[in-house]
Amino acid sequence: MVKRSKKSKSNRVSLKKKHKIIKKVKEHHKKKAKEAKKLGLNKKPKVEKDPGIPNDWPFKEQELKALEIRRERAKAELEQNKAARKERAKKRKLGLLEEEDDVSMKKESVGEETLPVSKIRDNSERAFYKELVKVIEASDVILQVLDARDPLGTRCSDMEKMVMKSGAEKRLVLLLNKIDLVPREAAEKWLKYLREELPTVAFKCSTQEQKSNLGWKSSSKAGKTGMSGNSILQTSDCLGAESLIKLLKNYTRSHEIKKSITVGIIGLPNVGKSSLINSLKRSHVVNVGATPGLTRSLQEVQLDRNVKLLDCPGVVMLRSSENDASIALRNCKRIEKLEDPISPVKEILKLCPSKVLVTLYKVPSFDSVDDFLHKVATVRGRLKKGGIVDVEAAARIVLHDWNQGKIPYFTMPPTRTEAEVSEAKIVTELGKEFNVDEVYGSESSFIGSLKSVNEFNPVEVPPNVPISFDERMLEVHDFRAVFVF
Ligand SMILES: Nc1nc2c(ncn2[C@@H]2O[C@H](COP(=O)(O)OP(=O)(O)OP(=O)(O)O)[C@@H](O)[C@H]2O)c(=O)[nH]1
Image (cartoon, rainbow, N blue to C red; front, top):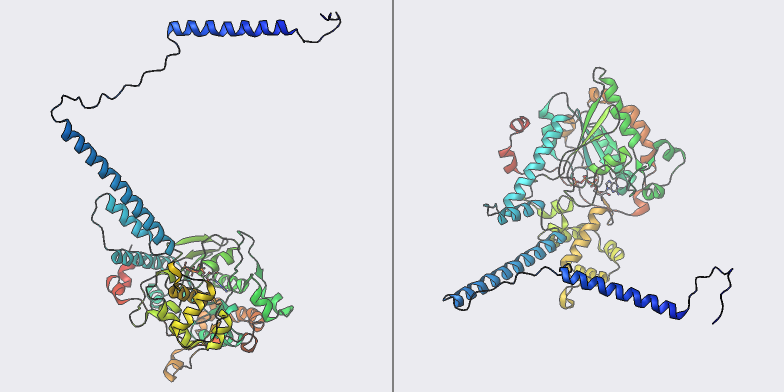
């Protein structure tokens, strides 16, 4: 055996000693386990076994059958709920289900009497209408946002009447939004036309995605640097914010007694009300999206010490009896909810030269709306099960493009009749309150730098007439009656 040096500090031991230790530890554990067993310490608690139905019970057979039926029923109910959930999720994905429908489902589950879906939608539209009334009531200045592509078609005469009726001290201002989508000639003519009736400002909302620090393009810079039409169209910055704020400040100053004002923002769905608020606030404070009806209730945003903004939902019951397609083309209905998306596309084909659509969708020439949609569906790969082309999906794509400005179009103001000319008056007093000359002067620079018709060849379409509310809603809600809350 190797003798260990007395100086060595190593812990190495001989194998004999190591095995002896292992053996001892094993014996110790064994002894402990034996003792624990004796005391009953490591016994697992016994699970009470279900004795089941005693064999000698006379009704055992019937009871087993009833049990089986109950089990089957519970299983079927689970399956049913699962299928209903799947169906609802599918509908929600397609945008066919509203929150109210969910509410009705919940009510159904607790056994309450439920309303038909159409009635629920009616009620939701009335709720939006009530929000609109609240916004008008609470505001000093009401900004009606119009889509510059079709300002008359996105004007709502009933909303304007509501403002007029709600008080002599309320002021209505028009805001021509999305000017980046129209040629300079149209923007200028529309501004002149609308300014004959009401103070009107031109605007382009910021379309930036970031949460804060949304850009503003100063109107003076746009003019001085001679920004080309191209750069104006490409910039995602907001244009016209300075002029609008100047206009509001002028109004605040002209009413010395009143230091702060509330500005209600109203307009048809999708004209850009929420985008306007975000652009002014320079951050995403309210939700924005290409879906009409995104804003569902009144929202308050404090712009600064003197100005409070109120965002209003745009969906109200609109008179759609004469032409559903025209409502769809004004971007007032959810495209996913349209029962017939093909009719509005038919209208688009009537308005647009086929050359424009062939180039835009990269399809061969077509001879009918069905042919066009078949070709679009094939090019875009919209196929149903079994490889059948999905014409409706193609129609929805075209409608989206129309509403988002991918199919460029614009309108020109109609010539006023003699009666209208005498009616249309520049409300000089109103103009003074807002000091419009100063404001209009500052915005002319960026209007001048918009693209001209020849530069991007948009399609000129006839302007629509202003839209009204559905009479059914007006019957129920007399304006004065609704103002009493
Ligand atoms: N090109 C362009 N698009 C804009 C402009 N302003 C808004 N949009 C787009 O228009 C769509 C609708 O904007 P929203 O601000 O959600 O419209 P809204 O009026 O609040 O809509 P509702 O909530 O349905 O009442 C969005 O896709 C915006 O990006 C603009 O000045 N130019």
